[in-house]
Length: 127
Image (cartoon, rainbow, N blue to C red):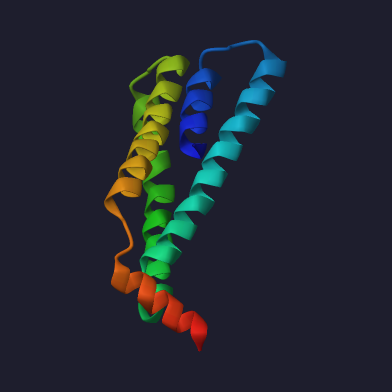
């Protein structure tokens, strides 16, 4: 849900132009959606990896996420260099948040705990 809200708000940033009050609301909600979605990704990764591998898996997840922090501004710089209008720049950014939402919904149906996973979790909690 967070990424979906963020996608709508990010797309709206480039559309509202001079309406400063509405812009504050849209930027706030967009940031809230992205940060909430990112925290959800961290929780999902923590529950996906088995206990003995969790710290390594989370480290890799967060490290790969840093690559997006590097590549994202390079991608935005290329779009700006092509003289795209502001509305199209924010639509491109919103499409990435929309893609994240679609992936999260797909993962909900693809990652299901097995009976063995649930039994192992109960065993770990029992000790």
